[in-house]
Length: 91
Image 1 (cartoon, rainbow, N blue to C red):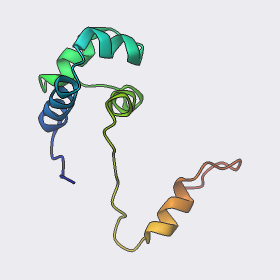
Image 2 (cartoon, rainbow, N blue to C red; image 1 turned 45 degrees about the horizontal axis):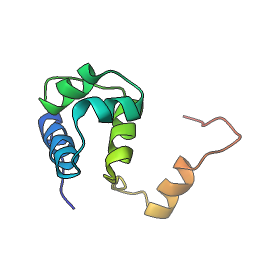
Image 3 (cartoon, one colour; image 1 turned 180 degrees about the vertical axis):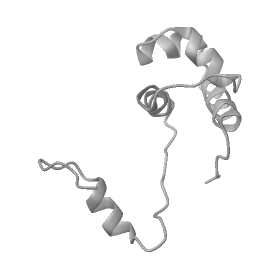
Image 4 (cartoon, one colour; image 1 turned 120 degrees about the vertical axis):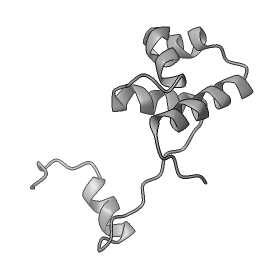
């Protein structure tokens, strides 16, 4: 597991994974449901994506994203707070 520190690193990870799997940018973008332009931008470290688009790319490439619990919050508490709920979240 590695720590991603900036958008350039996530872009390089996406590009490396995509090429390793033999997938071109056009095909990955099509599979993800958007144009090639934002994918090219993120791979070059210059673009921004919505969280939904980024998560879709990572999912399609089989890249897992993990979050570390903030201090003072156990992993179990964090999982409970992030679980889907029928009640609106309180701030």
